[in-house]
Amino acid sequence: MTRYAVPFLLTTALALPAVTPTLAMAQGDLREAALEAFNPLPSTIPAVADNPSTEEKVELGKMLYYDPRLSASGVFSCYSCHNLATGGDDNLETSIGHGWQKGPRNAPTVLNSVLNEAQFWDGRAADLAAQAKGPIQAGVEMANTPDNVVATLNSMPDYVERFNTSFEEGVSFDNMAKAIEVFEATLLTPAPFDAWLNGDNSAMTETQLAGLGLFMDKGCASCHSGVNVGGHGYYPFGLIEKPGGDVLPEGDKGRFAVTATADDEYVFRASPLRNISITAPYFHSGKVWDLNVAVQIMAESQLGESLTDTEVTQIVAFLDSLTGTLPTQTVPVLPEETKSTPRPTAEVLPVQ
Ligand code: HEC
Ligand code: HEC
Image (tube, rainbow, N blue to C red):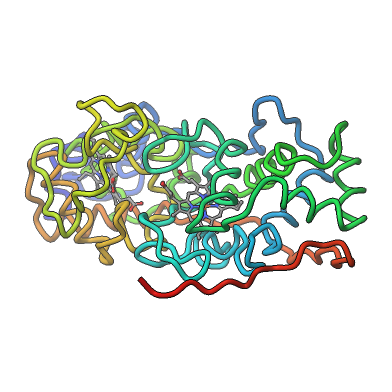
């Protein structure tokens, strides 16, 4: 029973012959502890502040999410970097955007992002509506202007009608962001871990449960907790031991850029870990492709611990239980351009 050599609640109970009732009891204890640290995903779509959801608004938000005409080049949509078929991110080290420029950070997943306390690696956007306005204007992402977005939307009667149905004030840059926000709020991915938290003893394997025990026992859950197993709270990356410049490049000082407080140098939001197995590469730098390596780096840098290979395997097995199922998506058909639709720049910038 070496795989239970985990100094956690489980140990005593599981040292007994693994008859089902005993296992169920041990799972009960583990579940009770887990429910102190984590919450299962809500069973209904969470409401977002000052932005009531309707079916029409969600559909409009989905269209905008897929529409590359929100970018100056006509090439990039939210979907380009947050591909729902590949875990809600782009699986690149750092994103490629307008004119084929490389951005400074790795793209986090949009899945379950509505449940994060704040958005971005440094938490600089309070919610998804504030967030959505960023990439559209960012020079390295979609490089557009609010005026040009509004002109684009107003040029297509189908969009105008849909905005009028969903919002009193019709087309506006703010309403575009609000529609995207309610669409993103639907992107919840219930996982085996949720089924297990909700009482299904067969939802997780023994290795995954051992990994969960370690995740709590070693202290990972002191930062990665709550419904998104992270997504709230800010900590120095390198709390105990700063990782090398290959993983933590010096140029990006994280929350320091938001608060201008010296204590916030190299401070980042504890990452939400749902779907982490399918969203490599890891960290804001995107420098680590192997989840086992990422877990080992975390143990050393945040906890000053060196994990055994078995421990890493178990924790990674637990992280696999956070991979969930996206609600079935249909690809939206977007409105046709008209004569007055601003033309895409299709700009290609010289390689620097
Ligand atoms: C060129 C690639 C690119 C495009 C296009 C893009 N994003 Fe992002 N997105 C990123 C990157 C990179 C980050 C992280 C930036 C940071 O933290 O500084 C990010 C962060 C986010 C986050 C925060 C998630 C979290 O866990 O904090 C959300 C939500 C998001 N983007 C949604 C969108 C939406 C909606 C659009 C379209 C309006 C969009 N993105 C367009 C690359 C992109
Ligand atoms: C003191 C707080 C803290 C502790 C403890 C901690 N983490 Fe983290 N974790 C963070 C922060 C902050 C980040 C974001 C790092 C960055 O900027 O790239 C992170 C990032 C991660 C990532 C990469 C996420 C991504 O999207 O790329 C993984 C995986 C991870 N942590 C797993 C763990 C595991 C497993 C443990 C326990 C061995 C652990 N963490 C312990 C704060 C913590």
